[in-house]
Length: 203
Image (cartoon, rainbow, N blue to C red; front, side):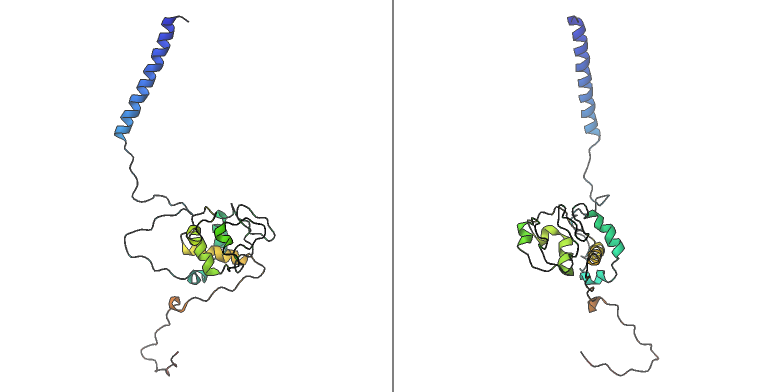
């Protein structure tokens, strides 16, 4: 190949590179991506900043949601946990410990599993409904420094469903807690023309 032919090839490559650079600069000046004010798609299990506008919703006890929790829904929601956790009786640990019989069991219950220092320090503390709810809301906030990378489950209905499902995965499922009185439906008012009933004793 003579020098003239080489210069033609080198010139073509250089011209192409200049053209691409020019197009890139022109495109950047025309299209300026901006951050969205609100996520268009929420990914389950990823922490989302709480909204700052409007009154905050009053948190209800998990017992309120457990009263209507569906085990079938819990099984579906648990699929996002199944990548790390086994919940079959006698099953081996995965990235996380086996969760069969976890409801009512104690923290750091699985022998031989390498728990984080944060959870090992809670060994013996029972996994009751409230503790499981707190953990599923935000593992990071519940036990800072634990190994679990999952951000948490935002909806209390979903957390209750998972807890109900895990409660069913046990040799001795626990009875669900009673719904707190303040969240129970109010009694129907007596009819206007009904005869006055004897006053009930004060409690």
